[in-house]
Length: 147
Image (cartoon, rainbow, N blue to C red; front, top):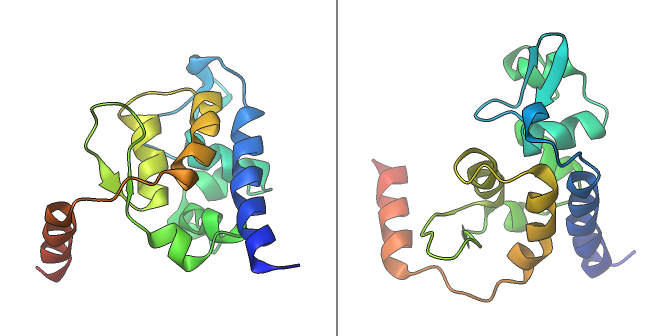
């Protein structure tokens, strides 16, 4: 299988996982991968992907106690290091948020409060986005990382 096919498959797999989620927001979690409320598991977009890939709720909730960290879910889905680390712009009109894919998905979940299927519908447009991250933002990010 060629790298190009694998690349496109990882994006499609993540899209399919998020589109399979219920549109109901009360079962969605914000700012945590997972939590249990009244015996009901709630997941953010990335936590839901982890659960769909077979991670236990406990491992998603307490990643520091587990070798199956949610932070590695994009790699497990087949995203290359370059795809995971590339700075991307938020697809929401007027939003200036820019970061790597993992943080961008978290931003869509936590800040815009998009449902999981809505985030799923944005995955391919994020991949295909031809906008260029402004140099000023990249310089600021490098400065912060080196601080």
